[in-house]
Image (cartoon, rainbow, N blue to C red; front, side, top):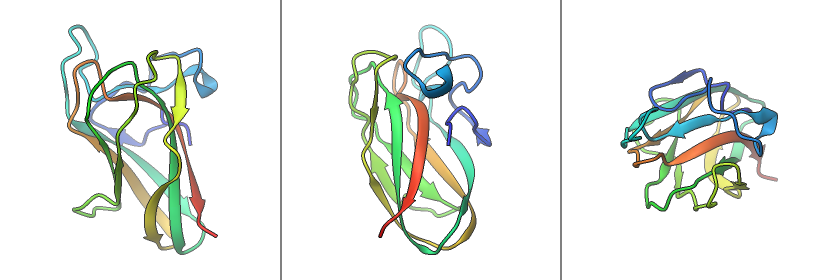
Length: 140
């Protein structure tokens, strides 16, 4: 799913951040910072409503860029759970147009049906990451 196609968000810009290396040329950009200079840290979330086809253990793989050295994770929540299912620390790709994948991140068991997946961050100056897309896959 393309991250700029966000269902609800409190941080980041899904409309005006274009990256040549991104799928479809756009991202949910400036995730974790204010959208204008001096790009101060801003906490918040991005919410995606997804349809889970089968009950089982699921993984998520997130494609992103990061031109920032920080140690701020992105936490991943399912539904309205109080604790994150997982978190990952975006690595510095040294260019906002240089993308990499998180690798498969285990989300545990998810029941079939409609669920929100929520990315949360405490934020970092200049942003935590530009989010391109994510892929959900059931473990075999």
